[in-house]
Length: 477
Image (tube, rainbow, N blue to C red):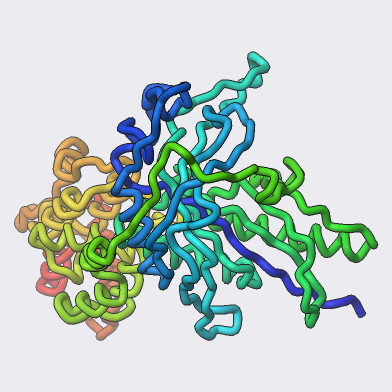
């Protein structure tokens, strides 16, 4: 019988903070833009330029630290991490090695055994992002875009406390939820504003010592992370079983091919020749400043859930799903504030929104449509302008590109037919053409009326008012 192995996983999670400007200069942090247009002498590493720390970066880092049960370092500083790479304009990155802003925290997740489990956070530190290399295969060259250089990051370094892909995803979902609720980042994996590097090793069950770990990069979705973990577990076990050694290295995951390959041998801290940054003053956090950040803490998920159930009368199941993602909760609250019934809004979010998210394989925090347009759609149904069948069709278009439902209905001639006299004639014809279904209704088979409603809707190309159709059928049969 083969040996049993245990997987040991720790994560380094980089989160781009939601500041309007970069960490050490006043350049904008917007995603996108023409290459090298959000740059200045500081973030392009020009000689003689001096960094100035963005206060908001420190406050976001403190807020995340407090929400993840960390100790806040009152007297911190920045260090230079020296390495040479084309997207690193200064040939060093300003980071924190010796005195990170947050230490010794944890978040609670549901472990593989179904019970609550603490994943410890070793530290959270502030640093600047590097630029981006764009590889041009056609011209056989690489181009550098420094728009991202100097965008503020926090790096959340966990202890090796996770044992499976499920626990890793639960930990990342918990972090994302906390950070989104704080407004510290939108945490969009697809845009790179949340990136996770997975440190993984395997060891025989019962062994005390950890195995040799590898670090995997280029993971931009929870599904990719789960696939990469499974692949790396198997790769390391195969190496050990065949008598070979696992090499400590950084590997790049190719999600399309479901394969990872070695990028470089894994560096240790001494390889980076860290030293305190001489251009930046220490970061001193007073008691008053810490209390001020604490006082701005938002309504977190548990409080929001309780309020939705009490204030809006939502079932626990609805409140649980809606509050899982801050953007969904915002959408719900904004739509209700526009004068819509809470349960009706919840039904659209829980039903059609979640269905289309699943079909399109996107996370609910990537939805594009606005509360204004969802509100307009609900008002169109309640005003009997369109029926629910047409509303679902309109919603699908709205989900894709946030179209204005009112304009779309007008443009596509989708308004519901509420002319009772004209409808009465169509219903009369349907009754004449379907004697068996009529007989079934008369003999007490209530479900048989559904077939007649369907025939009427077909005859009116879906434009009839279903409530009126039902009423007329019952009257006339």
